Image (cartoon, rainbow, N blue to C red):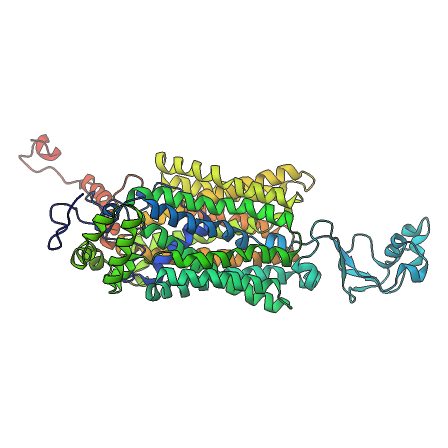
Length: 618
C-alpha cells in the first residue's frame, strides 16, 4: 500500500498530463466534447487501440506521461469489481440502441398493396380474382378503373380494346399483403403512392432528434451531471418509445420518434462519459471496443425481435419497455468523480472514490484520500480545461481550414451513404431479416481490416480507399439487373462494410488532425455533419419518384467524391499529436524551407571563386 501526501501528492511520482481534458470535464468545450462519445456509440466505431485515439484525452502525452486522475483510479483499484459491473450495466442498454436506430426498416416496411375495390365479390357473383381483374389494372398499385371493365373477362379481352380505360386514385384506401408484416405504419396510415414520402420524413425527424439531443443533453450533462441525465434519458427513451407504439396519428408518431431520438443522444453521451471516466487508461481500449461491438450485436437482436414480433406497435413496445428496467437500476450507478471535482463538489467526489475503493477491495487506500490530495490530482486537468476556443478557429488558418473542409465532406458523405444503404433493406428483394443480420455482421470484419490498414499503411490511404470502394460498389449495383439478387445484395453488403471501415478510420483521423486546443470543437463539427448526412439520406430516396436509380447515383457519387477529397488531408501515421494551431500550420513549413534551400540562384562566377566555394564545400 502506498501513502499519499496531501501536501505534495504528485511530487516525483507523476509526469505531466497531456493538454487535452478528458470527456468528463465540464469547462472549455462544453457540449462539443460529447460529440466524440456520440460518434463512438452511434456508429460502433470504437474498436481501435485507445492509445491511438488522440481525441479522448486519456492517452499518452507528448512526454509519455499519463493523466494524474488515471493514476488515482489505479490507486483505488484500477479495473476492479466496480468498473466491471459499471461497464456491464452501461452496455446492456447499448444492445437496445441499435434496435431503435434501425427500427423503421421493420415498423415502416412496405408490402405489396393495391386499391381497395368498390364492389364486393358476393354482390356481383364474381370470383375475387375476376373482380380484381375488371377493377384494377394489372400490376397497378396506386390507381383503379373508374368503372368495371367487363370486357377484360373475355378470352381475348386484353387485346381487343385499343384504348386503355380511364382510371382514378384509390379513394377507398388500399389492401395490403400481410403475409410478412401483419401491421406497419405504412399500412396503418396508408403511407403509399402519393404519401410514401412521409415514411422517409419520419426517419429524418428521428435523426434530427439525435442531432438536437446531442446539443441539448451535452450541455445539460455538464451542468447537472452524467448519471442524473442518463437516468432521465433512460426514462424518456422508454416513455417516448412506448408512446410511439400507442400513437393515434402519424403526426403524433413523428413527434414521439423525434423525442426518442433526443433521448438516444443523451444515453450515448452519458454512457460513454460514465464508462470511460471511471476506467484506468490501460483498459479503455478494451472497454471502448466492447461497447462498440455491443451496438453491432444490437443489429442482430433487431433482426430476431422483429421476426418474432411482426406487428409494428408490439415491436415498438418490445424494444422500448427494457429502458424502464435500465431506469430503475441506473440509480445504482456512480456519478463521475472528475465532473464532481470540476464543478466544486469535491467532498462528494471523495465519497464516491472511497465507495469505489471499498467495492474494489481497496478500502484502506480510499480512506487515506482527502480533499487536498484530490484537488492536487485534478489541478492540471482543471487548468487545461479553462482554454477557450470557438468554431471560428476551425477556418481561421489555411491548413486547418483545408482540414475542416475535407473532413466535412468525409463525415457527411460517410453517414449519408451509410444510412442510405442501412435504411433501405427492401430494395434488394431479399429476405429482410437475413439482410439485417448480414448488414450487422459485416461491420465486424470491416472494422478489423480497417484497424490493420490504419496501423500498417496509413490513415489517408484507408480513408480514401474505403470511401471510393464504397461509392463504386453502390454505383455498380445500379448496373446489375434486379433478377441477380445475390450479386446485388453482395455489392450492397460490401459497400456497407467499406462505409463502416470509413467511420472507423475517420473517427481516429479527425482526432489526430486537429490540435489539442480545438480538437473537441472539430469533433463537434464532425458530429454535426454526420447527423446532417443521416437526416438527408432518407429524404434523397424521394428523388426515386423522378428517376428510380437517382438515389443510388447520389449515394454512390458522394463517397467517391469525398474519397478523392480525402487525398488532400495530411497523413498522421507515426506523427506526434499536435497541441496548437501553429503546430498544425507549421507541418508544411519544413518541406517548404527544404525546397527553398535546394533552389540555389544562378549567379555568374566571381573572380577568385573556386568550385568548392560555389558548391558550398569546405
